[in-house]
Length: 69
Image 1 (cartoon, rainbow, N blue to C red):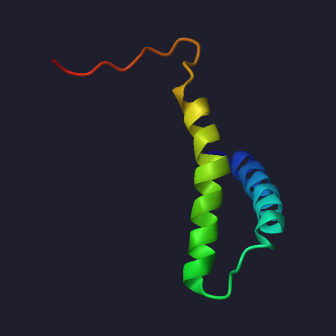
Image 2 (tube, rainbow, N blue to C red):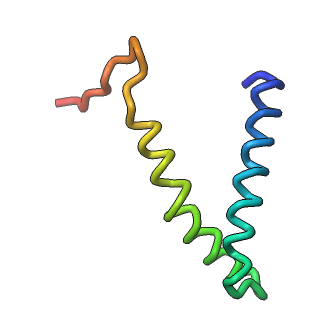
């Protein structure tokens, strides 16, 4: 990853974190366990599915992986 890509990634992560933090304000987060529960739920609801969709798309020139017989 180039330094420019890392900077852009960091900026996007900060923007996502701000959105998710605003949503999480209504949930209890007084302990590390509660914080982890909220973060995990948000990841599973919002972030994970979108990453899965993106990663499952075939890129131009990319061969499909096949399982060994």
